[in-house]
Every structure is written in structure tokens, then in C-alpha cells.
Length: 568
Ligand code: ADP
Image (tube, rainbow, N blue to C red; front, top):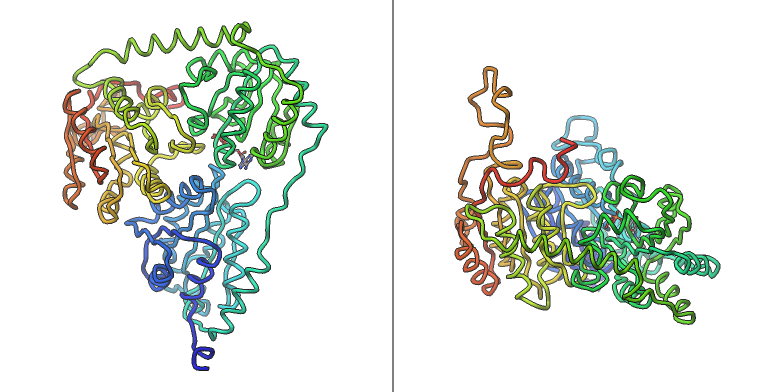
């Protein structure tokens, strides 16, 4: 009887609701008023990864959502904690990744009176969320948790927000009341309706593909989140159509596949006449689907879960729904009416020849050992070390200007959802948060980050988090002494009273980033030659322990702004 009347507080009720809804990992920074919430969650079996800064924790939650297909959960304190967390929430929105941010907020009775960390957090999150709720009473918690998790993951995934004032966190209900609230929330949980695939649209898609002379299949992180790799493989191999992954679509089919057009990207998109685009927006990353990169007559078949995306791009044909489901139906219909371009088809020959030509040119450049290191030599050594690991392939995290650009072309992706980079928003500073999310989401895989020194610096303190949780993450820093590299100003630009200050692009030359991790008991390496790099990679990959490899790069190697030079 005593048990029935026992009281539980809101911190415990939030944790119970999260656990009941299937949340098993959380990322965040504790403090007033959410410390007890984190402890309660841990006590219920939810792994809480405690960060130094909500920005990195938010990036981790967003990437965890992408990698697992279930919303990543971020916990923050009120006011400034919530503002730091916006980085993660906005990143989830931009990349269409499922995530829920939960923040404590100030006492409801003190709103407008200058309370500790007071902020209208619902207004602050508004531009970045699909849905938000401020719980005004403990009884609203279970239903809010289930509803927010539903919205984050349904349709086009994105960020959602739960605001819990500190007075609500201190409210209590009896255990039996809590149970009935949880039961009600669970039994009323929404389930996403499955959209039926229209037969006439499938028939039109098949007819467009059949009539195409130079077809192309493009896929992106929407296909990855849909886990559509088997269906894409089936479609590609059944039709013999070459494919082009977006940067994070890489790995859904191996880069080494004979129909991979990645190394002939300009030809593939410039000359294709029908492009089947699966879970990828025709945004800047795909040159808006417009000339001069694409032919003006190209016909797009867009497959996307978001109807708004189809309305925005106005393709020849739009198929709205889950990529895996749609491709299954498409493949089934194609099976009854087989066609395959075949190796000798002129389009396949043209792509294959271009791929061979570009790959051999690139291999020629990669083959030389350049010391002091340019970007290519260490990237080749890293590629070979990663390939040598076989399966399960490591999850690769990449950010930076030249480091990410060069890495995208040189590093090889063989398995789905094994690449995380600056993404749709070109966000720098995601590296360590993504590494931690990847290690937590896929404990069987090694995580390898290849980052510029500038990207690394945004969240370098999180190397302590790597060590604290003993995550199998090797962070390789391409250290060229600054953003883009050293001081690249023309002499006539260096004037004025602060002309003796370091250039806005420069950092301390020769920064000892490898020592940062050693301060916490991790392993650091400083390397400047091929042999030193090879030995650091061999040792750290087999140790599967947190490590930082500080790679000295010639500060004048690479292009300013990487491949986006024209915009800077
Ligand atoms: P990329 O950066 O790889 O080009 P984008 O993030 O631009 O990819 O696009 C991903 C697209 O995938 C979004 O338009 C999103 O609505 C869509 N999407 C998300 N989930 C699914 C799914 N399950 N099935 C089909 N499309 C999806």
C-alpha cells in the first residue's frame, strides 16, 4: 500500500517517460536545474554522455539520430545552456536528422523578473524546430515526451524541443498516478501512417528510366536514414544505371562498385538526361539541379518523404514516401519487365572511361611521398590504413576546408552510414561531437576523424570526454597552422595599427594538439613523415583507445577556402 502512495518527482518521471519511449542514450551538460534528471536517467539504464559544452553534445545528439534512425536526445541547463544547444538543434534541422532537446528553464512565477538564466526558450528554439512544448505541469510530461519523439522522427526528420521549468521539475505525483500517465501516453502514442505507393507513378518512373539514354541514380542521407541500401543496390544492378552518392550517401554502395560514377561526377551530372534522386535535396550540394552543372533538359525523378520538397523543386516526377518502401515497389515492377544498360552501352562506357582516367590521374598524384606533407600524401596513408581494417569499416568523421575536400575524394567508403561530415550546413566544429555519437551508436566500429586544425579546435576539449568514456576514437588533425593555412595575405593587405597581430587565418604554428589528450591520459602522436604516420595509425587503430595524431602539414599546401574559394 505504501508503494502506491509513494511520490515521484518530475525528474524521475521524465526519465521514466524517456525510457518507456525507448530512449537509451542521452547527451548533454548537467547543472541547474537538470542534474537530477540526468542521474535518474542513468539509474533507469539510459546511458548519459556528459560533455563540456552543449554545442558538441547537441551535434552528437543530431548525429546519433542520423546513425540510428531514432531521435538523439540532448539535455541542457536553462538560458545559456539552451542557447548553446541551439547549435545542435539547428544542425538537426538543416540536415533533416531526428533530435529532441530538453532544457530546464526558470521558475514560471519568476518569468519577466530577471530570474537566474531566464530566457523565453520557446521563442529561441522556434526557427529550428518542427514542434515544441513547454510543460506547465508535471502531468503533461509523459505525453509531451512521446509526442516530441514522434514529431522528431516522422516525415522529414528534424529537431523538437521540450521546455521544463524548474518549478515543474520539483513537482511530484504519486507512483500510481505516474504509471497511469505513462500508460496513457504510451497507448496514445502516434504511429506514422504509411503512404501508399501509387501504381501510375511507378509506371511513369519506369517509363522515364526506360526511355533515358543517359540515366543516373543519385542518393543521399535521406536514403541512408531510410536504410535503403539493399533496394538501391538492387535497382542499380538490375538496371545497370551508374550512381552518384552525395558526400554522406557515400557507402550505401561501396565506392569501388563498378557502376560508381563518383570519380566522373562532372560528366555524370552534366550529361545525364534522367536522374533518379533518392533522399537528397537539389540544394547547393547538388548545384540546385540547374545548368551549368546539370544539363538544362535533364528530367528529375525525386523520391523524398517530404511533399514540400517535391513542390519546391517541381521535378518531372515526384514520388512522396519512404525511400526504402518506394524502391522496393519500383524494383518489383522492374523485375517483371527486365532491362539493363550493360557494360557496352555508350553511356556506361563513357562513365567507366572517365572514372578510369580520373582515378589514374589521382593515383599518380597520391603515389608520391611529399614531405613536408601536403594534403594528399597523409590522406593516402590514412586511406590505406582504413581499407586495411576491412569490415566492420570504421565510421569516418571529416571536417575542414581542404582536409574535408581532399578526404572526400581520397578516402574510401564501403559501408552505409559510415561517413559524417560538415553536411548540409557546412558546419565546422561538429567533429568531436560526431565522433562521440558514432562511438556510442556503433560500439563495434572504430571511429576515425580526419579534421583540419581549425575544425578540431572548436571542440578540442571534448577529447577529455573520449578518454573519460574510453571510446575507440582516433582523431587525426591536419595541422597547417590555421584556417586554410598560414598567413596568405598579400603584403599590401598587411597595414594599419594591428599589422603585427597574427593574421585572422593563423593559429600558433606547430601547436602541440597531441599533448591535449595526454593531459587526460589518452595517447598523443606527433607525426611529420610517412613512416611516423603509418606507425601511429597501426598502433592507434589496433589499440582502439582514444588517441590524437597531430600531423604536421605544410602551411602553404592546399587552396584557400578549399573548393569554395570563389565564395570567400
Ligand atoms: P544530402 O545532403 O545527402 O544530399 P539532404 O539532407 O539534402 O541529403 O536530403 C535528404 C532528403 O531525404 C530530405 O529532403 C528528406 O526529406 C529526405 N528523407 C528523409 N528521410 C527519408 C526517407 N525515409 N525516405 C525518403 N526520403 C527521406
